[in-house]
Image (cartoon, rainbow, N blue to C red; front, side, top):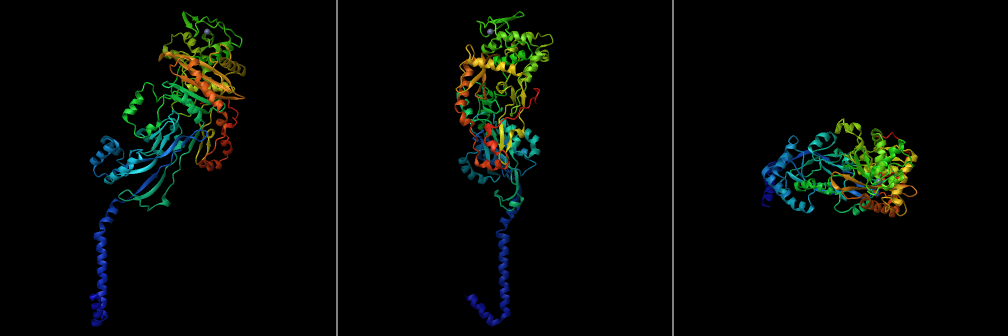
Length: 639
Ligand SMILES: [Zn+2]
């Protein structure tokens, strides 16, 4: 106040000129103070921003497509996951970082070094350190992360596999080999990639395309939101897969599989080739691979003598035993060696070929059989005798035209082709002087060198059911998401006519009917309410043990052919007593739930818009009743 009154009195005393001088001086003082504050007090702050601020091109990860059964029930889902990333350029103390990561995440110093080594030319690329960190851990860890500005959490998605199985496969982080191979296709060192199963086979469809955004982050890694919008490229999410699998049949087949046994069950719609159930036991939980699997767990899975990682539906080939006899019968009929009335060698419990005695499975013998009786009672001697009249090259050709000894082309990676030898194969493996006759006798009953996978047998018997039209087994029905694409548009399903004329096909079908429905048949207990049963048992001798592999493969017909079920059990005993009852249960389950299984699928809301854009909406809703187009008849070689 005194200063102010002095100023006023100064105006009075010295005039306007003096007042202005003081005013200018005051303004100058304020400016200097502001400048001082800017430069000295806040200067450190701006300096820090200037030095630590940088623009980064950030990838927006596309959401991977999910996997559903034919009723849109989930099989593989996306769930949120908390992942820990490292920005190598910000590391303050390698030692304290290494100690922290070892203690909290079990990451060794060597692993950390390797991670950093991999990104040495991209020092601002984030490195994924740990995946799927439980949410409760994230909360406590966030505190500790204050001391490590080089570390941060990012919310992404991971896979949840609804049930253990062998067909979905699993995803994992890309490895060095995969990265070198696919880096031009929009993968980074942190990308997820399908490692096995459908995840691998349909990687291109489910992956989607990552987006990009330019962001400016501060020293704490916080997004400053300066360049949003115009520079952002939205990701294109992956397409979801709708399979032919029926989760109810699948879980029923799982539930009846004998505990502790090894083997496979496949159920297939014979008129579409769509797989309804796909079980291989023992199996493993694919979710184990979603976080860092321990060395111990990995070792245990690989050392397990029951080999849980082997998909016994397509990756394992076995002697087919008597389920193969329909093939031997087929070539005999087609080559005109036998007809429906032809009686072959008398079975008195075996047959002498050269100086070797080949036993029939029944030591009592079956007498003389025609083809119908031979299939019904599964007499080995009939097929031994028949094999002596068949040329190996004719046999080989017929087997291949029946789609055996080669991959079915199912939409899964690493399918085994099985084996059926020809003369060249014998000469190559056993020398030029080998006598093939004895080998051929064994081949006739599905023993010796012949090997088949359960999927091959299921496809063959489905073809018997489907008027001789073999249809490529497959799991994918269509994709949904930003577009609906039917399986036929992605990769047409092969259709091939078996090398059997209608009369001969009918003879084989009648034999399979007799097996299940006539006195003396080897599977008369395979009875299904509301349907007629056809099938064949097999008990295959093998090098892996004295107990035979048990086979049953068969199908049911209502007013039309329905489904085929193949059951295979390793070293389980007889097909009739071990495998056939399981198939019967599944066939009965199918008929008992027929309306539910066949009812049109309800398309979930999130897919209706996408479907409505296409013209397949009505067809897909009534997908189970789609009429099969006229089969393309090939000459047997379809790939
Ligand atoms: Zn016999």
